[in-house]
Length: 398
Ligand SMILES: *Cc1c(COP(=O)(O)O)cnc(C)c1O
Image (cartoon, rainbow, N blue to C red):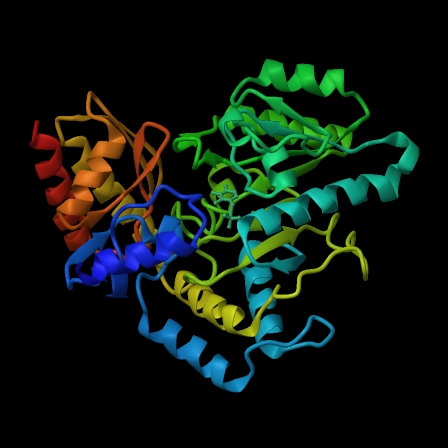
């Protein structure tokens, strides 16, 4: 048995089998390259599902995280730390939102958004109004906790776990008629509409501007909160700090997580002036939320992403990536925005292709039946070309 085999055996003996995993044991990484236990190198086009936004072990990020671990690693949320205050101020400054709540994951950020929306309506309209329905979209993904699964509009995730949290109604994405119908059916009961501008797990499906405008108008007219789940699309992934900026909409609540702290657990719920004081003392919390080490990593990410023309470069690299993909015969179409990329293949199975890429030194993701690329935002055009050569080679094989 080699090192890889013995690690996998030990792991599977002791960890619940809730994931289908590749037989790959990653040991370390630098920049955009990961190295396995046998010393093989992989170009990473997945960055841990868009999480290692600055790649592996970015020097400034490591420095910030290590310095914070030496200073103070954690304190309860009954006390303040400067590193949290700095991070919150920076993020609010960058996004124009008023205040944020700290959690540790995308699901937790969305739980906070759901609670905020329900309490907003409770406070304003009273218990008897039962204004607690949240409209979410078919094919959405909002997390794996019971409430965020209830919000998620994909039946495949719902098996086994009934009963769910009440009060979630699904509307078909990009169907304005369905949106209006469901709002009418639940007249006076809807407190929020929740959506991803690009449905990531749903297969990199970008919503139409007209549909988002319709949500925006309906919400404004009826005092319904607009919640944008930017857990995957946020933090520069699409070439703007928030993806919703591309569409000219301004949600009341935005959730962020994946790429926000460069690969350590974070989730935040950003609130506008209307929603920022809804969660009063004692109404919500999270032991690890706002962990100082995580905030230090987050500060390094925010400093980089807001530096100079970083976001412009994400856009340029996204264009380069897309134009190179379009040259490949087997590619039927390329979806998404910036460095959030979905690829429809003509005849090959996306999962087989991902596996073959791995065997050839390239890590990629899939979403539904598409290939999905969420490379580190710091990737270079040279690395994009190098990775796509591997993909081309894999696709050219029978
Ligand atoms: C990944 C994801 C989540 C869930 O995030 P976790 O950190 O896994 O809880 C929620 N929403 C979207 C859009 C996501 O992509």
